Image (cartoon, one colour):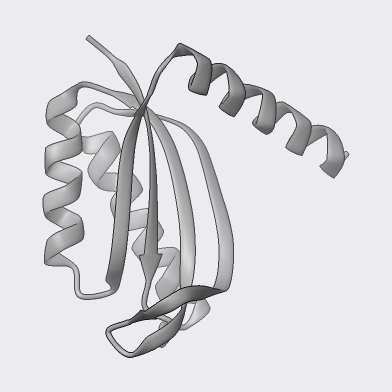
Length: 114
């Protein structure tokens, strides 16, 4: 049973651009190794947070949208907890309406880039 998920994670702001990209690639690798199909990846860049976390007021935000079984989410979240570069993360299962909205959002984004 493949569900559609969306995960957003915040990386520490002390990372350089290559380190940040390497971190995102690490988690994409964990997903694909576990049999997940990555649908979309977005790098939101360095953003100011609403409140300080671990005495940091900014962080690199990244979003991954993927299809996988529920056991894959457990592996991903264990990897998040073990990585000291990750400040916060949130993974949600998308219902059919959220999945349609995400697809529409992706479509609108690609049209704006053209």
